[in-house]
Image (cartoon, rainbow, N blue to C red; front, side, top):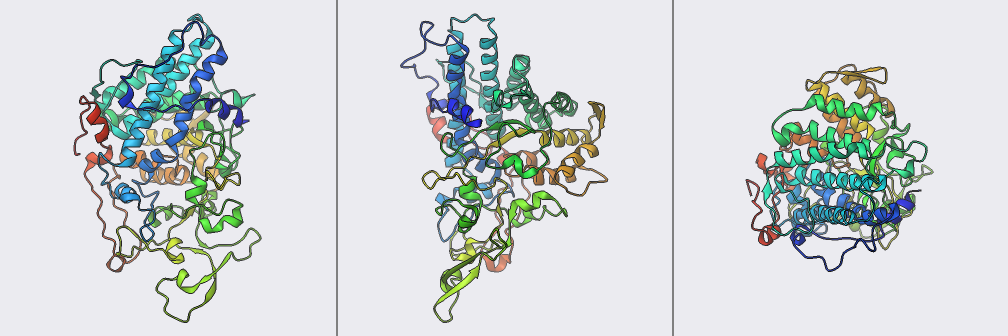
Length: 544
């Protein structure tokens, strides 16, 4: 079913950035040719979703996760270093010239520019302003624009507000609190013009903004309001979460793994808003390529040219310590086995297995073993070496279960990536209550923070908690929401973004020296140099 939505989104690929806001369009739709029908509106909106998919699960993912303990991407004898961009994320030493800093800015403001262009086209439509299709299309585009503005506000803090197309004057940087107010006002104005989730025909609303998506986004904003504006808004967080829960449109899927499987989609009951990836029709998801241990490709039926790059820090993996928790099974660690439980073995030269081996030459049959500790060699920056033992350092994830439809050509996955889902709503409401908001009764249930936490744990078959505090909720968010682009956001809100998580192993012999930049101003990224050269009205964030 999701291929229908993907095909619509892929009608046109659009690109652009804040640097192109003042360009006069070479062609435009006119009231004589487009748009006139509801179908025209949807075709016009499609490129916005293509833009969203393009970088959310790669470049944006790296900025949100590589800067935390959830993800590490070390060098392998120089491979995967890519100019040091990953270790700069790890150590919070990114600069205005960092490739992700530039690309994500262009991605976000390119999408905002596209939204503004589409709204301009709709404004010129001959369809009556009171037509329901026109009203809902405007609301859909403004909701997407607000979502992109949220991403930009969260990542860069102080950004320009642009809501017209074309733009005659180069925009000025606005304070983060003002951007927050702009997004909030936009969302409140359009929420009732959006549909609710279609329970009988989920594909009708899947992957599109709904009232539930707006309430979820507002809840996320209010939960982080102290970070963004300096003032807590926990009661409003609860109110927005209650709006989602009270709708009765969402429920936790019985099996945690199903939420992230390659065939996830409209039938996933807890998804509020997701990106419907497809390895052929809408790419941008590389979890199969980078997340698993590539040598296991025969076991999972995926291409043999995948990567060995991404893993978790050992400290983060240690959080998966609840007995019976289904989420523990989303990691690959220790000796590996085939699906029939026989050892997964590789025949290889002994020196390929262990570069330090000095014994008799020849081959060995080795049962692949993934180890938790990541030990730097000290020979190259942030590098673990490149023999098989080194390549298997670091726990690997199969949360986004390897997609057998991944092709050797693109190495893209079809697992849809959730942006908002019900489990996050439960945990956000629980946190807001612990932070001082009043507990509420929804759908006849008294929902305390403990009740909400245990809803999430019960689905995962983890032991139920008897008490709840903020540290427990942060750890539960780690277990439940890892690799969903929320860890940086969470750590900043909990004032733990600067907590240094050393590489496991003996620092004295590993060659790795901890060196995180703990300046709290690095909780937001710099404005790219390339953008400031083109727009002198953009002020650099403090600390850069």
